[in-house]
Image (cartoon, rainbow, N blue to C red; front, side):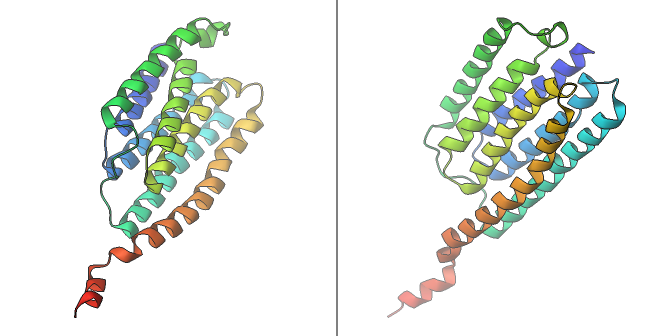
Amino acid sequence: MPWVIDLVLALVLAANIRILGTSRLGVCIRAVAVQGVLLAFLPLLLHPDSRGRTLVIALAAAAVKGAVVPAMLFRALAAARIRRAIEPFIGLVPSMLACAAATAGALLFAAKLPLAPGHGGTLVVPASLATLFSGFLVLTTRRKAITQVVGYIVLENGVFIFGMLLLDAMPFMVEIGVLLDVFVAVFVMGIVVDHIRNEFSSLDTEQLSALKG
């Protein structure tokens, strides 16, 4: 069902633009969670014959990318008591235009690659390259640690999409990549929460009483 695969990947690309086009951190986290759930369908769509292995990968991806990591990000967001990110180094509209240009470039580049017949007619490679670029753009142009973690997750989602092409050849590497999300999520979020607490510890309005007199 190539059209179903393309539909899922088109929604993934739309999530990239949504993440780059908003300053609301909650919207970014929800978009990356939706993106993670969508990517969980890819193993089953691209490799319908190997149900057992792909089902495990799909469930792990949905749990980690669609639930665990977003929940940790929302917890950090609540601890920081912020809703909007600071103005990025590159504005929202230029970021969206850069994402659209990268997506178009990825489509043109993938069309010239000598891909297998089953992969050449889908958006797998273009979506992977465009998602990698989108994650890198978020990671390097956003100021808040939470948004940078979102950028890392988007970048890793691009790697995950490309890894689906290798599921038959190197299934163990793909499974390790999914499990690596858990380790990296815990490790990165520990650092992020620590930095957030240090950054916002001085924003308590009760401390203004020290300025009296």
